[in-house]
Image (cartoon, rainbow, N blue to C red; front, side):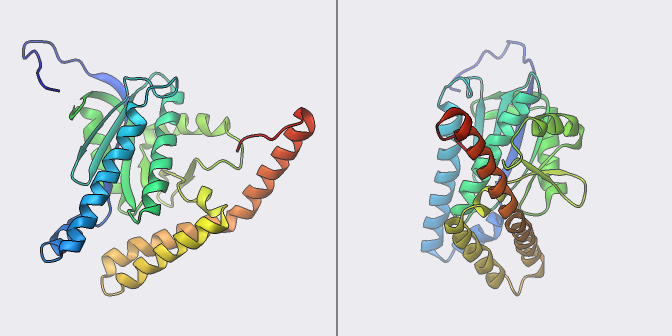
Length: 256
């Protein structure tokens, strides 16, 4: 945004919004003061963080209209979509889940909050009650490397989940009752990706052995990963049965 009309009325829109940040960023920045190689890694991380969001939001298709917005500052990302019904929340959660999974593969676990409400969001500028709520969920409630969904949206989440094939990753419910994006089950269904994820998680656990507070976050991630792996076999069976039934009926493969 290069200019604006200071006298124009500012109208909030009802938008689905996600506030996301990179876990452990603050400490990494402190450590980078004496580590040029780490500074380069941080720059690469932020670039990937912003570039992936920009590519998704600015690529205009039927599923990604031009009214989608994103803003990025340091390790924080705000993404919002216009909200009309639970399908718009589903679209945001689908983006968040895919983004979360891809960033984890880069070694960047994320934490965040998702809600729906009044928001002004144009390019780099974002503010409104929904922004406050999403930030609160991320900073005060999520705690672990997870992206949680406002409990006021539980009915929307259930409605969206009911329309999906059973093997598709979407959400899981945490012990505190909050729905979380299910960013691990897809990778858990792949043996190749499983090896990569397990190496990363085990590496973090070893790295933070002397830091109980940080270690707890990666132990939580390890437990969530174990749950996803335990569920992977049944998901694969369900997917394969669905594909076999589709092939028998239509004579061709069905997309995942």
